[in-house]
Length: 153
Image 1 (tube, helix red, strand yellow):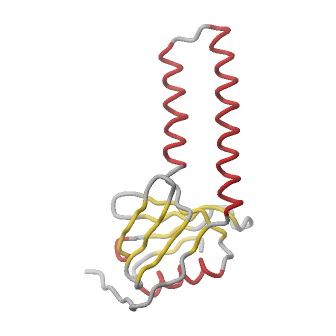
Image 2 (image 1 turned 90 degrees about the horizontal axis):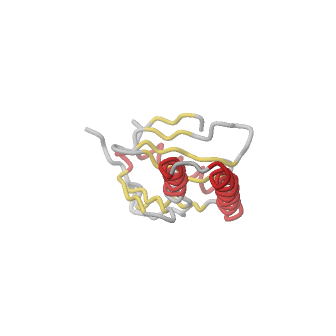
Image 3 (image 1 turned 90 degrees about the vertical axis):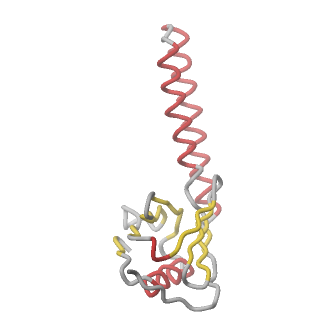
């Protein structure tokens, strides 16, 4: 059984830089617009079947659904619970339920995503890996749940 080691204080929340989050969604809007314009013009000229257009719309919709679920804020309450906030939802989970935390793939670039492996799903967090508040929060996770694995951090 996993142990909870917590303290009664509330930690400073980490929020991803607004510019980074905004740039991500602006690029996503541009990508979506280009896809719709290019595929739409090709569909009009060649007369694509309706089924293919529905498949493309599904992929675009799923991309947006997933992207709006990427968290931009993490709060650690009293050392035992994590709250990840995104535009689509808020995930509240015990620290002991996080099995692994993975850092960004490209270590050279300080901006990226941190992946939290939860019991039944994965949660992502926009981050600036060099931010001192984020580093403090990650250190608190390390001390609270010693069984949690950290990869690339």
